[in-house]
Image (tube, rainbow, N blue to C red):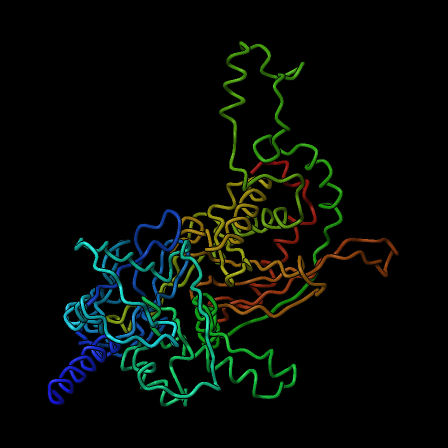
Length: 521
């Protein structure tokens, strides 16, 4: 009798042990394919710019995997799994479609079949400890029906993903119970990490943010941060506000471009331009802005007197509907900048040197000399400051555009640059670039002069336009509106005398706008 009773107790303890140790169930390694998620509206594919991991590589949740570039912006892709990257499915420079696999990650998962085999029969429920939140009462026998498949966890990049509830139950005064501790769901890697960090009991962190309350590494890190916040005395305010921010893709490109600018010998030249006549011309131009750039307020009535009144009413309404223009190009008044650009384009037509770009020899023709490619029209780039960095969209064939059209282009560049992700496309930023770059620094600060830098591929010269101000001339005491302009030219192809003479040509078109009457464009 004693032997059989002991055997029964041993059997019950064995069953209880199997029931209370789900975390000791077998683990199996599963290879999961991480697919490219939808990172923005209208984006169907991305170029993989750089992989930040090499196979095989251990990765944790939210570790940086790669950087991709779409037509609108660059995005950093992080890992949704804790495991090992075993294969990169898309190489750097290749295009990946949305939904296409980027890499394979080997992760550990519980073998649920082994876990089910270890559970005791419902006829003899094992003893249950009621003190732990995971402790359950013996369940009544249920009809064997297939359990519904667990819902798939949303990807971290999914904007519709709800926030994960993370709560902690801390019982520092409770005695350590190995049965309760072993019953807490956690992978061996998380348990090892918790022991290294000095976490006394994982049961204090229950329930975790994982499936079925599993304790994840992020839960341990959050618990450690909470503990340090309550123990460590407050630091000075200045130290708390410090943070390290990695340079974005646009600023990193600007970094490299500015380093390359040191290879170009610069020649600087500064002077002032008289804007008084342009200032007097602005009210006339603002009163005659074309309807496509300054459309009237919508009305259900046709104007009483119209140049198109000879046409039938239906035709007039159809013409009004078809004349809708791009709203990003609308404006109510001109500024000085499009007029200065118009005059600059006229000067560039007189100077082929400033319509030129440098063509460097290829690596195979290392001994040959560079060439100058002279363009038939004036291509002018605009230095544009945006929330994501500095861009230089190009106004192509500026000499063929009116001042109204130039103002519309500037408004469009500004609207596209302010969107996030950046809305500038290769149409606004052609690969060949421009031959002269204009930076309107006076629109922001009160500076009159600057020292702009010319980067490779940025043309043969760059000009910074300062803040215009009224000054009284010493010779006659007359007040004039003047603006400072600062040039930096590539001294390898542009002589100092040529830069000064070109500026005087620009001055002629700026200070005598009546010359524009000879041609609207």
